[in-house]
Amino acid sequence: MKKWRSIGDSFLSAGVGVAFVMIWEIISRFQWIPPYLLPAPSRIIMAIIQNAPLLWQHARVTLLQALIGFMVAILLGFLLAVILDFMPLLRKTLYPYLVTSQTVPIIVLAPLFAMWFGFGMLPKVLIVVLVCFFPITISLMEGLAGVDRELMDLMQAMDATPWQQYRWVKLPTAMPSLFSGLKISGTYSIMGAVIGEWIGGRMGLGVYMLRVRQSFATDQVFAVITVIVLLSIMVLKIIQIIEKKMMPWQHHTRKHEEVLDQ
Image 1 (cartoon, one colour):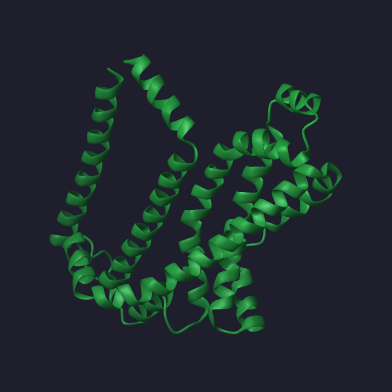
Image 2: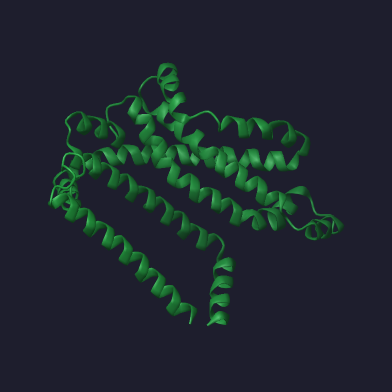
């Protein structure tokens, strides 16, 4: 029963999306909204097809910057979360500053990075790191802090070293929280790279978007937006695949629960 309900929900969601696109197409075709403000989905698709080689060249640069920044953010976020969990006093000291750092809009810091580091890849990567770092760190910190106290008492009673406690109890327990942060950060990484490219550069989807906007090519602007959305979805799907590979027990548990509910 639950399986058929899930299939029905998927069809309903897809139907809403198709209806939205059709209404958008009709509005644009009859020019109820001027095409230079809202181009039809068919024109956007044609813009993607016609400019596919150029879009791919810019998308590769954006994807590379997002990937490098995302990897650095994972490394730094993982290390900081483990250190703060291991040292509660340091956590109490730094946690308010971590939260405060997120109150500063990235779009405000981007011009400063361009002034300090130029218009190369480095400022874009730094922006991606800042965007992705916080969700990863906080998610992993919360996951490590939520470990069952009885399991930790058992490990200590067995005279386990801190490394063994993290290896066998804390990190496996915190994995769902970590991947929740990774999913959020992964989608943010593309956005962070594009924001960095708005400030300056030679290549990238953000640079290309500014160029076509200045030409009032609205269909190409929407084409770039579509590519950005697709890249973000692609990153999210890759993280979900890695999650299933690294946490097979959770995937099997969900399947078992679905079977019991049927």
